[in-house]
Image (cartoon, rainbow, N blue to C red):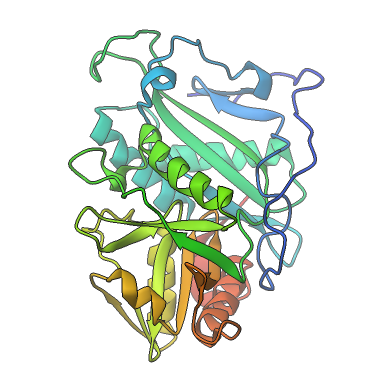
Length: 340
């Protein structure tokens, strides 16, 4: 594995002004910038064991993963710190999950999680983003073949980065229950972040957007609440925080785990249990968590206001604590951050 870089040709970045769908308010400390729809990619990427110009990190149209969705991925954030530096959030945990999930598609690569973390640090130094950053690692079946198989194919990792603020706004989301069920573990493992499985999320959120909502919430096959299209879900009732269990086709989110720890450290009771759909309608608060959404409050669901429709004190408290942690302002969570 090498991180030796070659000179970047002119025009490797793809400029474009964001047409963000995140208009509205954002919590103090939330990531700043576009929503990733028209991202200006960093000039460098990691591909084939080396850091190369972004424009050279290409694959064939016959690539197995492009044809069949045979890959697993991660989403990682790096936040600007108050001293002007940048720190990657929970990076090792993300790479450990990536390599663990690779076993689901019978993939194996030579890089360790620790090596991928060091590659990412070097990549961000070379890309020299001057804002909050989103990092996308992708482990995929790279062989040019149309055969339906997983073994006997080349496995490859690619990593790229770009500036990104909120994937959605962090306050006042309007959401709807989706007609699309969440994929189940006996079809495409929801816990695996398998690339092909995200068609499920695209179908759900596209319908929500077409109907004027910000996000969609999906149910399991037996009618219990699972999660949003790209975020875990939490409910607050009488100051107790509840979230669906992983066995309800829920992704074991890295941010989900961080928020559970943060909430318990802050004195809140957090339980993992099955949630009925109508519990969402009578909740005091609802919020989403995830690398993209960060921690975002929900103002209405199926056009019913959540709580009083305006005030969400538990969510606001957790947002403040979380953004203090990711910005390096709370030394108790310094272990979450890896300086670039």
